[in-house]
Image (cartoon, rainbow, N blue to C red; front, top):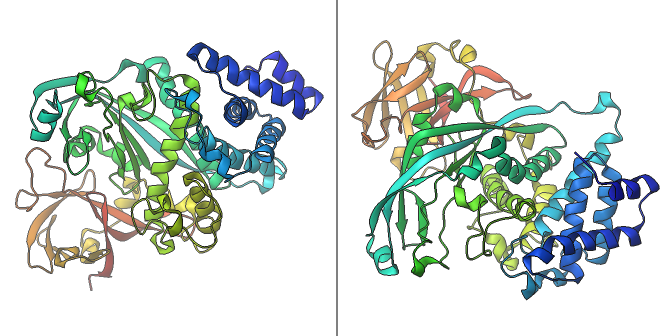
Length: 494
């Protein structure tokens, strides 16, 4: 990365706090001035520090990056009440709230790990496992668009089709890569360099997914029920098997072009599960293009994305982590960290980002978290070469979906004919599954009670294999995965 001469000079001469404070403030002022914003104090220092420290980090200058962050935290400590105040001058911009706080905390973890790693002999550094994040770009969406609050409440409006915003495709997906950079570096640091997540882009220009807008129980403009199934069906089976994580971006259905919705907040995505249970970030395309009305006004600048998108990704990611390690009770109730009284007694912070950092270091990176993060976060399915070692009869057995909430969650899988199985639950409901030997997937038939001709593959059953202590696949059945939910084997056929 290019480093401008003044920054390089400071780095070469050694860190001088007074010089650096002046530089970071000038950097923030130069960014905000064209926006008609003048801000001083903590917010100016936070913004300038983030930009300067990120540049230093990406140039490999860990010492300067650490010094910049240390100077900020010394003046404005982590968790201090002063971070809660957001100056009105920043209205219309979105650098996160508190200003840059999430990104600064993430970057602090990253540079501490980088410096610790650099101090180790090469032979002592762990080898990173490779995980794939498939970024799926959906070409079109279609649905009924309300033109007023009355139509939204009634579920009426006009039929529309949306196209994916071209900005997400330009310059080899630059906007998406920039939005991901800090977050993926944070994942690497959180696992002490043991898990490297690499994005891979899947462009589906011919796919059109169904979207909807509704007012209750929460105001939503997003994918309709089972629309995500169409995404999985549009991808080759090997892509589903090879990917650990997912990010699905679809053309926005937010009706903001109509005056009544110009300042209305809509939920357009969040966190769900991929085919093999891995994290699936879900959001509309405009989330990366412009600020929604509850977060600001106008199109995003690159610096705003660098500050805010890591915050959003971190928020959704920790939803997944808390579900992956339920024994810690870190999200026994949805978003429980919004209530400071619900925090564990040994958590000392104040803000949402503090909760995540303490959860990571005091729970998720401890020996009590098993399997460890770098193994738990690998979700790609077993390769066909290992699946084909299984015998057909070895799939038989008893399976349970946990937590067990009803008799449909206890299942017996029994071989009926050469490639045909019977799925029978303790409620007495049964249907057939046929082994697709090419993909090693159990295909659900039309006798499946959930059968939907619009999503015929929705209830196909994926085979999940056991992993050994090193995280490598073993040719033994761990469970069956349906719609992202795992039915774990409790007893094999005898």
